[in-house]
Amino acid sequence: MSQPSLRITHFEARMPPADYVFDVWNPMANSYEAAATFEDAMERVQRLAQAVREMWVSKDEALAALNAPPPPVEGAEFAELRVTAQAQRSYDIRSFDSPEWTHFRGYISQAAERISGEVGFVLAPSLIPAPPTPRMQAKSA
Image (cartoon, helix red, strand yellow):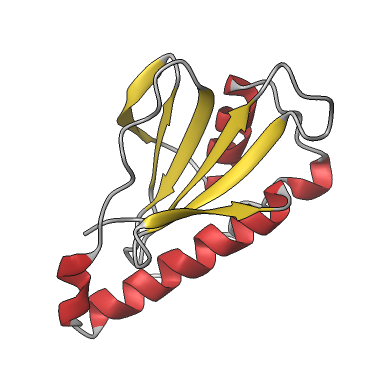
């Protein structure tokens, strides 16, 4: 099953704020979609992860047609965050200096900060997604 992802690409030759480009991998459309801002990209990747999860839960046959993001472009300075579509979300990351996907242990907010730091994009505190609030555990008798 393919998961959506958020890719940040850094272009040194451009002038701020256009020196960073945000793309979201849409496994249903089999393409990257441009996002205007980091916040828009995070929202889109999370909506896509939920849509893929709903396909998985309903055993939708279209799930088999979903594709993974293509290999990274040689020489591009990028960092990418992939979101699993499972009920218990997990994250994978890759970047220009480590192009293979690796599991990231932590919350989406931490993974977002990590990929942003890989390419020098400074997240405003308001753009960092909050970690989930802990749930109350029932006491066993």
